Image (cartoon, rainbow, N blue to C red; front, top):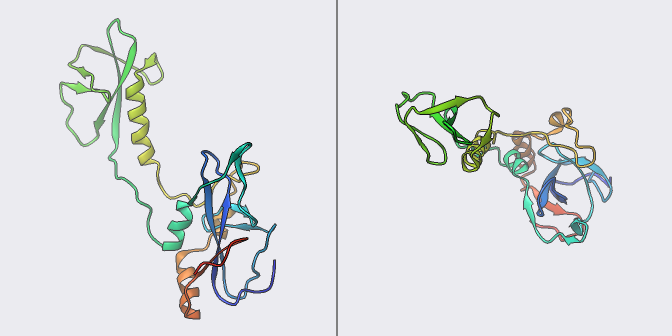
Length: 209
């Protein structure tokens, strides 16, 4: 750590992603009077992820250069004080149907608020009119297209805010990281009391205003 910050500032830190080939760009908030982290310091980003301050990784994987970085969406949510964009999906009832003497198990999704119809249409477009066997989840071989479309719908439902992430080194969720997250009101208050905008800084790069 170096001397105290003279104004509120944000430090951008690129880290290797858990998955994919694009670096995660996290934001670290430093309030006025707090020590400014330097290369090698372990700090907590706005989203709750522990990061080590330093130059951006040269490689995202062994032999694969790190050429691109994307903002951490959780850090942006905390910084801007806005709710994440979540697609509203009603609760659904899933039926697993298989035609007699057939192999694939199809997935039929019925909105909980919708009156069931005599004709059922699977996610893949297969139409059932009552001549199918209902099986339990995991029984038989699933229809690939039904499975992919169903998983895509589930991802939308699971896109709720995440205020902590897995640590890159041990991959264990640290519940205490949430208490270290800086709330949007604190950021806005720090900026208003000093009369200045938050300054973005990336270690090893020129200062960005």
